[in-house]
Length: 85
Image (cartoon, rainbow, N blue to C red; front, top):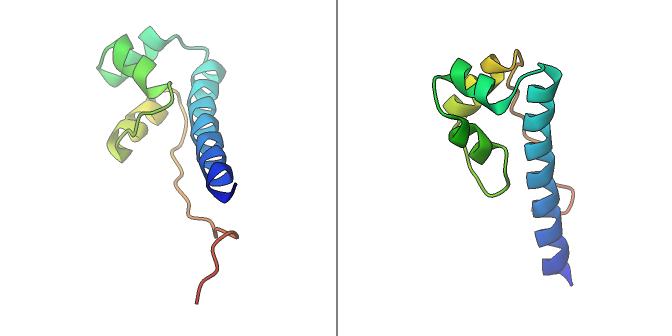
């Protein structure tokens, strides 16, 4: 059961990340095509970023943030499920 919970939590985090990307684009009032133009890439690349299962580079995320008028912020948070020695 613990492994199931870990996998579910991982999916939840991934879904949250994807939702954050889509919200940034929506907030900017942009289509995927418009974001792609601003990033100097294709709409297909933007669509991949906005779907689960991708692991974009920091540089790609910076370009996406700039294209949507957002600021990229990366943080580390304590994992309360892990006990440090």
